[in-house]
Image (tube, rainbow, N blue to C red; front, top):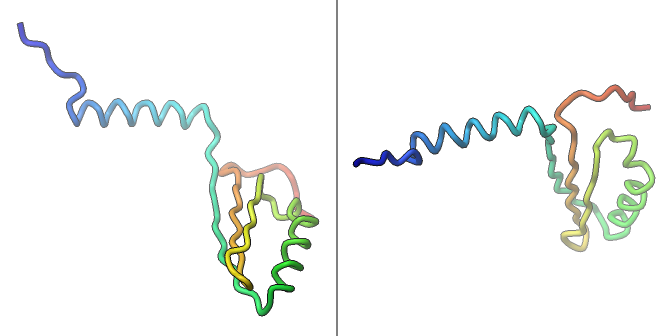
Length: 90
């Protein structure tokens, strides 16, 4: 008796696409943005980080991650909902 392997590359790809499609209907999509920033001094990096902590809620992102990558540079990772928000940004 022959048993067909249902997980051939083609069937497996179709199965994965089906799972991804089902998940996309249930899980809201997110969009990420990575910004690499260069500053003229380390003091300016500190000022930016402090200002960002106070005002990041105005940018519309769901979350932010900031890390200093050098003496005068920083990286910002912002996560946004892919669906439009009803909130209005001031």
